[in-house]
Structures are given as structure tokens and as C-alpha cells.
Length: 258
Image 1 (cartoon, rainbow, N blue to C red):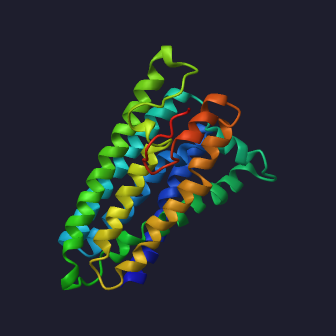
Image 2: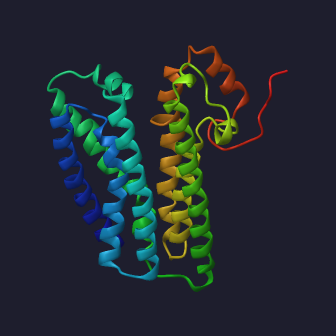
């Protein structure tokens, strides 16, 4: 059943991302896929909850939908204010040859569909048979998710407020949650997915689902999350000092300059 759910989820995500690809082509902006990302997991969670309706899968569907819809709304607002494509995608597309949009379909949108299906593995494996001794993991995973949700929410809120103040132009946000981590929003996001992973651990094969949050952690820390942001700010001496004294993702004590 788990394999069937994964296949159905992957096919649904291919269709879902194809629709968003059409939107991106109409808007002529590849960063449209960032808006679509959160919703991809909502699709998976709802599909699993419909196929295997249990208290566990329904709870995960609620949690993932709250996270996904909030993330979609936040990124859509940010993209609308920006008014131009994200530099990450401009940098990627500059290396392409051949048909631009055909390459975008497979390299960006279909790749995201596959990645979303893998990151969403704990959603799939949560539909398995529950192990009696592991019931406490439901509560533990829920509380980890809640902490992560509010952490990400307030990190995004602090950043949005900072950017919206014209007096902060050219300044560095290193207060609030951003004092203890350079990317506290990513920390909150990862906590939520590890929380979902803990809930999935209730089931006999739930440990395989941990591959999802592990993959997301690697992507954010070493591939598509932290590195592009920090490459763009590498020449800023203020940010260079910030990286020296502040943890990348996990909040930690600040190493104050002497």
C-alpha cells in the first residue's frame, strides 16, 4: 500500500507542478515554483488522508496544510513586492542552452515534483500500521511541529518588518531570532518536518520516512537554501562578520566580536 501511495503521490505532484509551470510561463517567472512548493505537500497529505483516513493521517494533513498554505501565501506576497524573478533562477537559467521553457519544465518543475515526493515520505509512511509502544511519538512530533511553526512564523515576520522599514536599507538584521541564527526561518521549517517524521515513526516502517526531513535538511543547508543566499552576500563585510559570529541554522550562543 505504501508503494502505491507513493506512486499516486508522485503522479499527482507531476500534474500539480505542470499546472504551476503553465502559470510560470504566463508570468515569465521561474520563481513561481517557490510559491508552488508548499502546496505540493498539501496535495500529498490530502491524498494520503483520503486513501487511509486515520487520526494520524488526518492530523498530518491538517499540520501540513497549515504549514503549506502559510508558506505559499508568504512567498507569493514577497514575490509580488519584488516584481522580478529570483536571482537564484536567473543564475541557473543563464547556463541553459536550447529551449528555455522546455528546460525549465524538466530542470525546475519536474525536479521539484520528485524532490517534494521524497521530502514528503513521512506523510506516506505515516499511513502504515501503528506499533503500540510508539504511540507517544504522536504527541512528541506534534509539539516539535508546533514549536517549529511558530519559530518560522516569527522569523519571517521579523524579516518582513525589517525590510519594510526604509530606514533599514543597507542594514543587517541581527536581532530577535536572527541574532542566534542566520536563517531561523529554515530552522523552524526543519523542525516542522522532523516533527512529522516523529509522528511517522509510530508505524512499523516509519523510520524510512525520516529520509524526507533528512533530505530537506541537506538541501537547505548545502544546496538550494543557505548557499545561494550567502553567495550573493559574500562581498558584504557586515554579513561576513555576521557569518563569523552567528550559527547558520541551529540557534546558538552569539560569538561576540572582541
